[in-house]
Image (cartoon, rainbow, N blue to C red; front, side, top):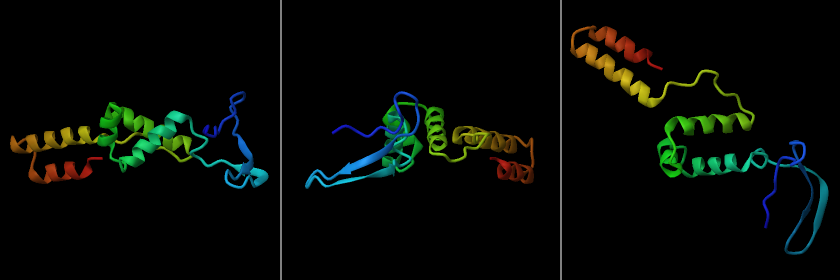
Length: 128
C-alpha cells in the first residue's frame, strides 16, 4: 500500500484527506481531515525521526546507525524540530566534545598553577 504524502507535488501546499475507507467492510467516511505533523514531513525527515526515536534520542547511537557525524545529527535534528513548527535556538549549543576540551584546558591550567581552585571552579560552573 502506498504511503500518504503530505505536500502537493505541484505547488508544495499542504494536502488534506477527504475520504477514509475501511479495508474490511468497505465503509467510507468523507469529509476534510488534516494530516498529522509527521505526515507533512519529507520522507527523509520522517526516516530520521524514526531512527532518532528508535535510538531513544541517543545522538551517538544515531551517529553510528546513519554513519554521520555529531554536527550532522544535530543539524538534522534542528531542521526536524523547525519543520514540526517548534522554535530552534538561534545560537547552537557548544557540543559535548567542545565542552570536554574546555574542561580539560581548565583542569590543566589549574594543575600548572596558572589559575586558583576558586577560579577553576568558577570557569567550570560557567561552561555552557
